[in-house]
Image (tube, rainbow, N blue to C red; front, top):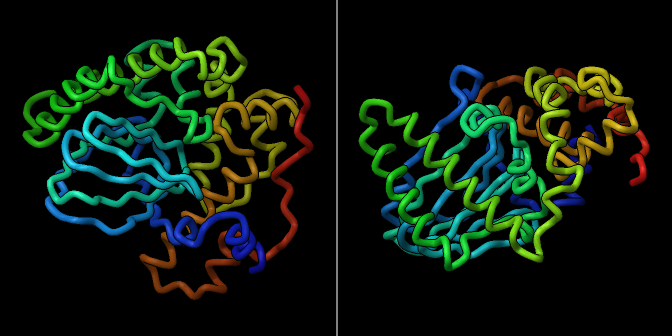
Length: 286
């Protein structure tokens, strides 16, 4: 079981304690939404989940933590989290409200069309992700307030309106981000990478307890192994090996928390007993 302990030397302890939530996301249910009405102080709560995450602070203050970096959020701020990215949040103001949406990438593709430049906002390092600048904070607040009301009331077609508000927010963030001189080049290869590796992501998500070899994932995407390795890292911001490990660790944590299966049996079931790992080929150079 030495493979289970290895990642702890690379990431903070709280990341290893991240609670897995699949939120029952599927093509038929690509979105879950929370109003984020906290009503009190919240200590550090750690999560990891399949979907992308976006949220808007409407009032109060909170903090998001990604690995060793943290992000202080106040009214009008926006945060983004990638798929299977361990993250933590805490609330320092009891009056904090912050609606959040967890969703599959297909949800936005179906809403705004095949433009795949927006996923790169989730794939870059947290410090490089877009934040609502002063010029768009009021727009972000307006969208967040509409989302909050729809999620709270859950009236007719509330999910449709929430989806449209989310798409609008991401389009605004992408436009501001691309106009910023400090943002990555929107015309780079990263912009269209997510669609090319989604078959591999789907393969891993469909088999969370099984080690997926990189050549299997590459074949699912109709890419050569070396090219797949390079494109996957562009799209997801992490290597395929690390993405697989995050998924399997989340599944292991889920089994430990929700079942009475012995640890040794879980280790065997999730293939964490062999120290070798065939997931990652050499990275293809630029």
